[in-house]
Image 1 (cartoon, rainbow, N blue to C red):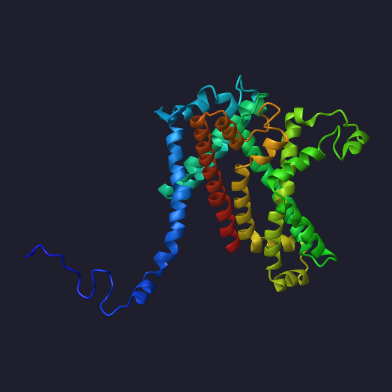
Image 2: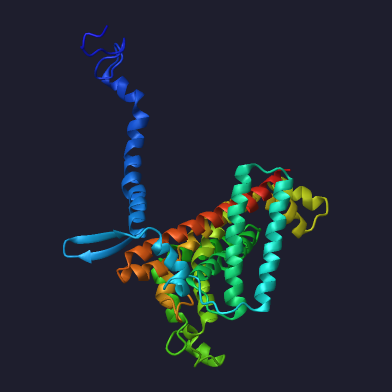
Length: 385
């Protein structure tokens, strides 16, 4: 029976020391905890806490007062406003009536997604896998309907499709060019070390500098290339008032900065491909394209998938170039979701700004997870088979 006095485990002192154990030995035994604790503390303070605190902003109407911030809980009103309220045109775009091309495109995408889900069910996919596919299919159908109701129907885009345009088109262009440059510099050509350094330079420039540099270069009236613009007959062309020209020029500046990142990573992957495999294929009479497709590409596929995933995540957060080069214009033609959130924050609309940020987070997670699971892992399994 307990007599009310504190007891300790046999061989363990009240201070936590084992019998006969010194403080130095005790510290060595718990060294992993002591080394990890500072990093975990910093993550909790500067990452996790702000992330959850912004949820309060996203579900609230925030008002500034003399005594600080005043919160009034509105739950999902800030999110609903992006889809059906006063922010719907800004976020999704303007809808009138869907064209025939839009309906045809929507039906084709719906049929393809249903067939994809049917094949997954027939193949005996798990419930978790089926749930993931349903989420991906729902997101893909939503984006397809949005694309059909805006671009294919002659209506205005919103910041959601602008962001996807930067991610899908921009990352694809950057990956193709980066892979070509890496493959070129991996060949036994003269001067390749010079080009390796030259191609890497744009990555060392800040996005702010890249934005102002391209804004100056593309100035057709008084920029450094003004004689060239005059020579080709574009001296009076205001590219910043053309929606598609502005989008492509933003991608041009973004590609100039980020192609070196893809280039340097893929170059390292290409140089690690076993030379004897390539030489054996060449001896067997394989062409350069066949050698790349059957030998080189499967070897660098894991690295290529990783660098593409990292680049896509960064592209979702694009804000510097459209802000500096076009300020999101003309209208909202080049405004990304991150820039949309920034403009709302500048207008002291904290609730809508946080809501857009969380919608961007959901979009990024779904797209990148789908890309990794249904594109990357699928191709990796095929390559290993």
